[in-house]
Image (tube, rainbow, N blue to C red):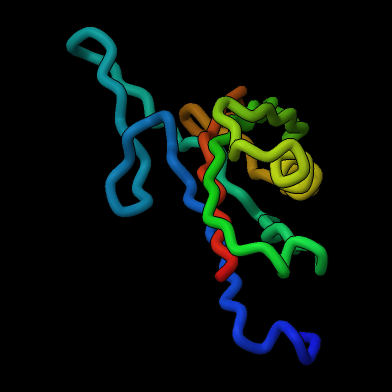
Amino acid sequence: MTKGLTNKLLSVSVCLCSLICQTAGQARTLTIGTESSSSFNPPQPVFAPEPVIPEHLHEQCFKSCCIAKFFVKANGNTSVQLISTSGSDEVDELTLETLRRWRFKPATLDGAPVEGSKKVQVEFKVE
């Protein structure tokens, strides 16, 4: 941290919000009819770096949040899009650049990889 920024508080938090309900990280069992059931596990991040805020933004005090949605294919390939903006084009682009580096274990249905999605909330706070 540079000398002029010693009093600044910087935090970035990332919250994962699964589109599929789960309890304490356990798989959800989906019941089909009365005689069969399936076990679904949503996609799980295996590499999730946090955004690094550039020096010129450290001089500004701001608090911001945006939400992104990942689409994870059965082979683990991902695409990501913002579904709500932080209010700053620069912060949005920084968020997308970082989220494009994330890697996921694909969702599984009865142990076999399937397509899935995951919502992510990214919060920025610079004081």
